[in-house]
Image 1 (cartoon, rainbow, N blue to C red):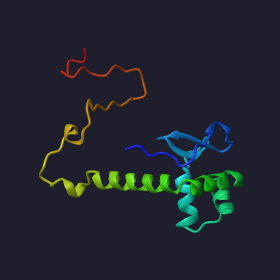
Image 2 (image 1 turned 45 degrees about the vertical axis):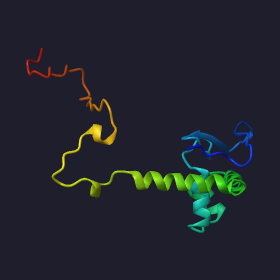
Image 3 (image 1 turned 135 degrees about the horizontal axis):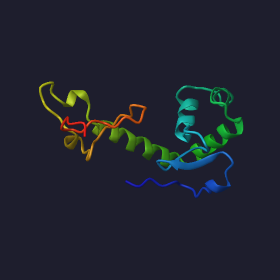
Image 4 (image 1 turned 45 degrees about the horizontal axis):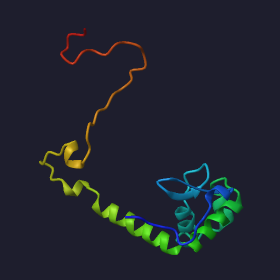
Length: 132
């Protein structure tokens, strides 16, 4: 699904906004999205000055994010719908019976491997237990 902005927005001309994290507009150099700022103002009823203080942002950055949020209501509505669908489609513990085995392939994960660094240069033992 492709979500497009209502208006062309030149992020390179913005001092405060960027679009790098999952193509979601956010505060440049931070992981705070425009969607987050909009939710803090409209759902949590926080003032822009409070948000700026809490996240150590220039208040102008919060106001630019809010302006972008209000200029693109359809974009953020589509984004919210997309996130809801992803959440609904996610596998939860209730989806797996306690006695049912589930492996990485069932979750769509390929080549799952976990390695641990023991913090020194000691060679790891061979899988056959020979150590060489």
